[in-house]
Length: 167
Image 1 (cartoon, rainbow, N blue to C red):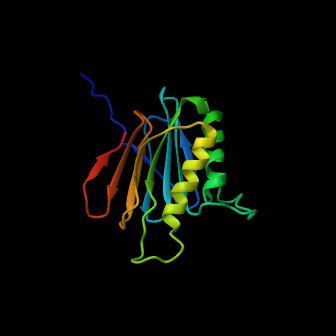
Image 2 (spheres, rainbow, N blue to C red):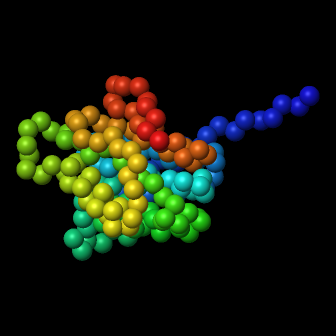
């Protein structure tokens, strides 16, 4: 009797300021080292596709980020939605999961980029009518997010801890 070959998942690394979408069931979208940055996962409730953006800053303020569409929250959210719609996942079928937004430096720096990033991403999602169904944000440790396209599972691992399923 012949054995079926099992394909190993393909990790697609999403670096700072980048975004990626996929409908390939073997793909796992990954962002490592989320400190004050936000890992924004958008997953289709019907299993058509998933996407991940590694958002660095809350707003573009007119700066050009065409080479890094995931850099600013105000540009990353619509860009990720558009890319997923092109794969057949309409915005009305998407759920969001947020990871990151940590305060990486002790004491108040007056900037609180992590909290500002989270606020900006949530505002853009609300404007698009996309619900946030899970979040692992704030704190002071870095995190890794994994989006498993096959079953729309989203996991997070905080530095020094075990991986946890958020969705």
